[in-house]
Image: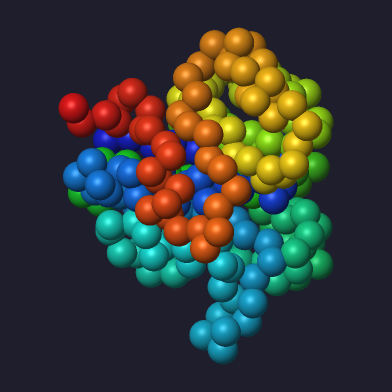
Length: 230
């Protein structure tokens, strides 16, 4: 049975959640852990002829050591690259936290050490008028990794995200400083500020990389303490 879960969230959309998720999976693979990944809902999918597929989900599927079908990795695929609940409404689908949790728990009996769940957008992305994607992590009681996209405004976004996660009763397993704006003024000072203000560990600082690969990203990351094998 799966031993551990990690839920990957971000301070906003387009902050590098998939890059960090695949980097963590690569590091876990290198440590000898048996891994899988799921992106329960993805908006911004392309019709491949065999169905809708999302590039982030394909990257997760490719790096995980346990090979799942595409439908297991991304059970809810939506074509429009917009807020998931709006994309679902426009395609005649209904989203619920319990349904997405069911897809995640369907992986529980597999012989795995780590299952990474990648969210969509930030922590409070709506699923419907009552629930957000945070409810999936909450129902799973899943430790959370925050990907902080290092750019102007990230301090506020990071601290508010951490505050919301703690208010939901969940453990923050760590956070990652992902440099998406290498020209950000006072970059090192901003990272130092986050290290002072977060109680949780920094799992790594990932520079802006050319020809980014999971192995490259993973070389800048450490796994949360509960996954360390040494």
